Image: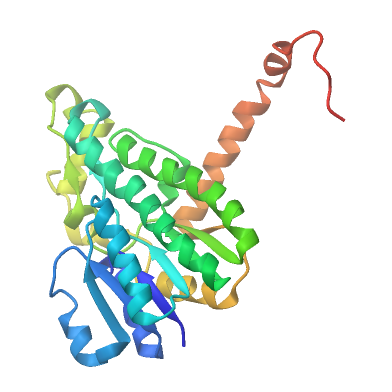
Amino acid sequence: MQTWFITGASGGLASCITRQLLERGDRVAATVRKPGVLDDLKAQYGTQLWQARLDLTNPQQIAEVVERAFTDLGTIDVFVNNAAYGLYGAVEEASDKQIEHLFMTNVLGSLRAARAVLPFFRNQGNGHIVQISSMAAHYSIPGMGLYCSSKWAVEGAFEALAKEAAPFGIKTTIVEPGGIRTNFAAGNAVFGERMDIYRDMEAGQLVSMIKGEVPGLNIDMLKNMVIGDPDKMAQQIIHRVDQGDGPIRMALGSDAYKKIRATLLERLAALEAQEELAYSTDADDVVKQV
C-alpha cells in the first residue's frame, strides 16, 4: 500500500487516478477547491481518503496543507501535481489579472506545492513527484499562447528540479497528455475579452470551437474526436510510479506522441539550418572545449 497526495483531485484525470488508487487499497490525500465534492468517495472508502481544501494561489495554505498531510498520514510516497486550468484567446485579449492568476495557479502553485513536499521527501530518503503537464508544453498556437507558455514554464522548472532531487532518492515524472475526454477545456476554461479583429482568425476560431459557437458544429462528434481515455491514462501513470524508473517525460495519447514528435523534428530542422550562422558569431580567440 502506498500513500499519494493529489492536488485538484476532484476532476478529470486526477479523479480517475484517485478512484483507481482507492479501489486497489492505497491511501489518497486529496485536495480540492470546493469542499464536499469527494464526499461519495469518503463515504465508500473512509480513512483511505484524506481530504483538504487547497487553493494553489495561496502560498500559506499550500505549506499548511502539505505539512498537515504528512503529520496526519505519517508518510507520503507519491505527490501528484495536477491542479491547473486553461486560459484561451489571443494573447492581447487576456487581461493582466487573468494572466497573473493563470501563472499563479499553473506555474507558481505547482512549484510551491513541490517545494513544500521536497523537505519531507528528503527526510524520508524517497518519494516520487508526478507533474501533470501537457503536450502543449512543446508548441504554441494562436488562441492557446498563454496556457502553452504556462506549461513551457512548468517543464523548464521541473526538468531542473528532477536532476536536483534525484541524489536524495526522489524520482520525478513529467506527464504530457494529449486531449483527454474530460471537461477540462469546456468546464474549466477561462477566456479573454474577445476582440473583433481576432474573431475570424485562428485564435478566434479556436475560442469559438471550445465555446461551441461554431454554426453546425456537432458537439457530441467533437467530443468523440478527443483521443485520450482518462482511465487508461490514469492506469499508465500509476504503473509508471509502481515501476519506479523511466524517462522523465511521459507522453500519453497518440495525438501527444504525433504532435510532440512533429514539433521536435521541425525545431531540430530549423536549428540545423542555422548551424553556419550560429558558429559564425563565435569569438575569434575562443578556447575550444575538448
